[in-house]
Length: 498
Ligand code: SF4
Ligand code: SF4
Image 1 (tube, protein in one colour):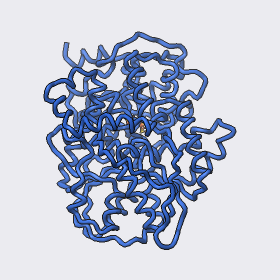
Image 2 (cartoon, helix red, strand yellow; image 1 turned 60 degrees about the vertical axis):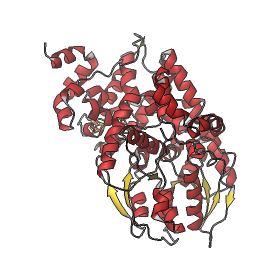
Image 3 (cartoon, protein in one colour; image 1 turned 90 degrees about the vertical axis):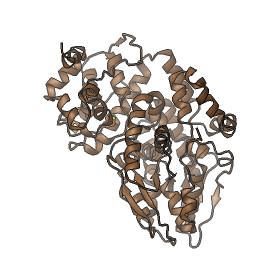
């Protein structure tokens, strides 16, 4: 029997049915998007994961299942397929947006929730590239959010998966706990114990997810996060707006220099910057993982905090946080105390790139003769439609040359916690992105999301490469302050020396 026939026989019945229903030749499309048929035939279900054999009836309970009318918006045209990173990797219909929506429909029509269904949804990066591509306006982000909430409530994950996810969510949304971990792991990097651990092969004794976590650990620049952002920073010159700033969790713990640059630029552009010390996590990671109660708790606290700060705008510099906070009104739609407040809050939320262009930049930009490759973070480009503003902010710097990265619409594989819980496809996407970044020949890579920066830096490092990296606001800050290109390029990627 040929390989293709074997794979067809092994294909779950719902895959075959969906392909038949929409009339797609997945092998052909896989070739169109540049994957070999051997890769296209790669089975995704159960690889490295135990099949529990669970069949849960009904698949979804009555609390916010994916809305049937949103599912029905999909007309099975397939325009989204070449834009979907997992489809690009494997050419598997059920690992495409259309296939995942098809599975949601199956579940709504009475099919049980199975390991295979959950696996295909788990493998989705939530990158929303399909939303950009879809001519029918399918709100895939909302469908995925509801589906993930159902899975988290109803599907019994393997114990080690539960344990690892529990570890992630007891750590990442809490800057004080990240601070504690940093103080332990900082010396591990500082005294090069990581090199010893790598060379001796000790790390290979760790379970795969912990290896992935170690590989993605940013450079814990001891001291950077110890300089907290002041609660109030006055505007330089005439005050144009009173703005609140989300300092974030990972951003605060590991990328303090980005927060510091954001405050300086906002102040230089006439913002009085308020950074409430009591603020916590915005809930983005929890929303994307389907942890509804936790996400609601974080969202309510964020609204309380910035309402008390009495600001005209709430500014953030992390793409994932921005796309979540702009959807608080949807998240809190059932909450009688917060629904209206969330609607008002959402009107104030701006990504920092968006805010600067909206206000009209006034601070003088000094020349920075440097070639920059700009990476579109998915939750900025696809999630918020912000593509022009960061480019405009960079292009306004005299002497700066902007280069585009091939396949800019395709995710780098970071995707919240995806590169921790699905390290293999994340690494493949990271390599692909790193290749395209290097091909630009740029001196500096610029991205608006801490997760992307870490992911691309790790992928470059795996390939024995290194590239200075910065957030767009750091480049603008360097220009306003009249820093030299050399000082900008001294910023190494955010990875520890390995
Ligand atoms: S969110 Fe990204 S990975 Fe998921 S289906 Fe859409 S394009 Fe594919
Ligand atoms: S592009 Fe939109 S309508 Fe077409 S298959 Fe994809 S999700 Fe469905």
